[in-house]
Every structure is written in structure tokens, then in C-alpha cells.
Amino acid sequence: TWYIYCMAWIFLGIAIACEVLATTALKLSNGFSHAWWTAASIGGYGLAFVMLSFSVKTIPLGLAYALWAGIGTITVFLISLIAFKSSAEPIAWVGVVLVTIGLVFLNLGSTTHA
Image (cartoon, rainbow, N blue to C red; front, top):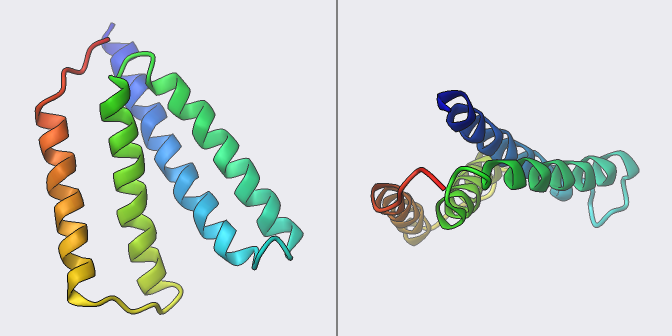
């Protein structure tokens, strides 16, 4: 069953990566006016949900969703700063730290079996 456990975490990692790529493509689609970026966004979200559904067969739903949303949020925030030259006030960085702390606490307080 270690294989199933590892695969669930791999599926969750893929779900996070797909969600981040889909959200980035959403920005690049410019309001769905660029077909390829629109298709990438829709496909990425679809694949993200499929992978998330596979992961929650083993990983508790609350933990999986919190990690998916939290890591995705932090990663997209960083992509926005780096790739799209957005700026962030210091309070935004406090938010990133708080999300990270919240994810650590959720992980520590959750069981990793169904």
C-alpha cells in the first residue's frame, strides 16, 4: 500500500502543477481572446481536477484541497511577481507566510490515511 500512498501524493503534485499552469494560461488568454491559451487553461483545470480526484481517494479531502489551493495560491503569487512584473505590498508577504503556516499546521494535524 506504500505504492498507493506515494501515487496519491504524486497525483496531488500533478494537480497542483496543472492548476498553476492553467491559472497562468488564464492570464495569458487575455479574457479568452487567445485560443491556445484558453485551451491550455481549460485543459489544465480539467486535468487538475482529475488528478485531485485521484489523490483524495487516499489523502484526506481537507488536507488535499488545502494543499492544492494553498500551494497553488503561493506559486501563482510568485509567478505574478516574477513573470508578470506585479508588485506586492509587505502585507501581501505576510499573507503568504500565514498561508504557509496554515498549510504546515493542517498537515501536522491530519492523518494521511483514508
